[in-house]
Amino acid sequence: MNKIVMTLLMLLVALSVAQEKIQFDDYFINQALRIDLYQFGDAREEFATIDQMYREAIWPGNPNHLIDPFNNGSYEVKVYDIASNKLIYSHGFSCIFAEYRTTTPAIEGVKRVYERSVRIPYPKRPVLFVVESRDKKNMLHAIFTQKIDPSDYHIIRETTLPHDIIYPALQNGDPHTCVDLVFIGEGYGVDEKEKFKGDCDRYVEVLFGVEPFKSHKDKFNVTGVLRPSPENGMDEPRQQRYKKTTLNASFNALDTDRYLLTEENKLMRAIASQVPYDAIIILANSERYGGGGIYNDYAISTVDNERSNMVFPHEFGHSFAGLADEYYSSDVAYNDIYPKGVEPLEPNITAYLSPGQVKWQHLLSPGIQIPTEYGKDALDSLQLMKRKIRQEERKELEAAAAKKASDKKRDAIKKKFRSQMKAVDDNIEAIREQYTDVYDKVGLFEGAGYSAKGLYRPMVYCLMIYHPENEFCLVCQEAIKRMIDFYSE
Ligand SMILES: [Zn+2]
Image 1: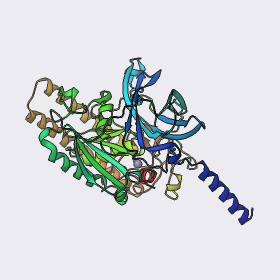
Image 2: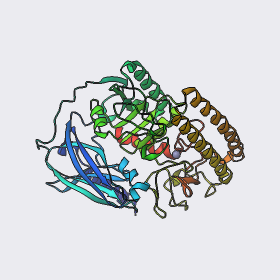
Image 3: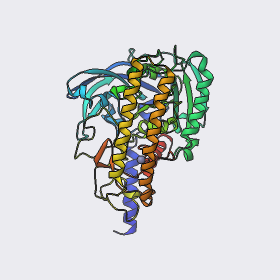
Image 4: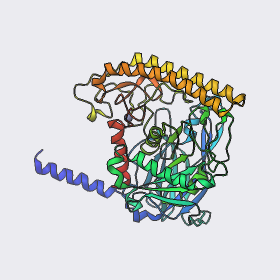
């Protein structure tokens, strides 16, 4: 093929892509339609239905990107223009219900209901709203379809004038071409407004100290929103501690120790909607270690734990870029979350061992051994010891709580286990030193996505498993960068 024909062909392809592009103003106005869903079911069956719909003042998303290119998340929302039958908006997401479906109670048939809101740009004309759910092979199937007429008077048009404390922590420009983060304060008492503002500033610094957020800070807006709680702190059911807080955030989510979530979706969305937001991060006013992050839903992290600087960007990696956990040796509630023989959707873990199939093949280090040896077996047995220490600590803390032991006694227990943990960590360091040459390489390192075998991660260290300097691996950095571009380019 000569050069002119080639150029003409490329031009034609470029033109046809340009024609395919959905023009925002043809189909939408610059407002948002928030659709509150109920999801109900167990591991075997599921249902979704609309609870209520709200018209929100501003659509903060990027009008240049209306179709989701990421193919990630357990669900996808699709919006079709009824007159032309054209797909005009799509958006992948995950939710607590999707995680619940992989837990033992759900497998045993216990049905539960969860709230989950999705937002779409406000349509000009009637649309078909479709929710699709993935099966075990990650194929999408429609589970809910409804015609929505934007002029329907059932759509609630309440004023969204801010009535909570609003704190602009970082302002860089137009919400349509910036990534707009809302930091919602949870578990802050009425006298803790200044602490909340200080925590917003602190976590702006934490997040934008980590690449690729660091070099793209000028593409972000961050606004803090605080509705003070009657009590400060978090629910800790296993410690039998309960606090009355605005979003009712609780540890032991899905009965997992350090897993912190809120199930107050509608309230969270109402609070967030006072400011333009693309992504929600909840700052949980607690010293305990923990957090959670759900793709295109929200991230939550405690703010006063010694490891909060690591938890915060890790959870945001889940919620913002749909990154998978790269760790595999901690307790989780999930069963068979990555079925054998199915390639995970997340950009940072793979089941494939052939370099030609690996999603990060363009980043593989030249000549890297595949799979890449890094002393895994020895490290695994030491990780097992750490796990036992953690279990012992939990047992002793629970026994102390049952006896209503003082905070001092509880602190002494924590201290004892911290020193045991340090001894094991020293051994781990010694093994890591033997394999230092692979530590800056991109390869296929076995152990990822809660599986010691059969799933691989891109680098030894990453914030999605552990990184001594709190950095994302190069593959996660690239995935985050793609998402920043999606919102801002
Ligand atoms: Zn990573």
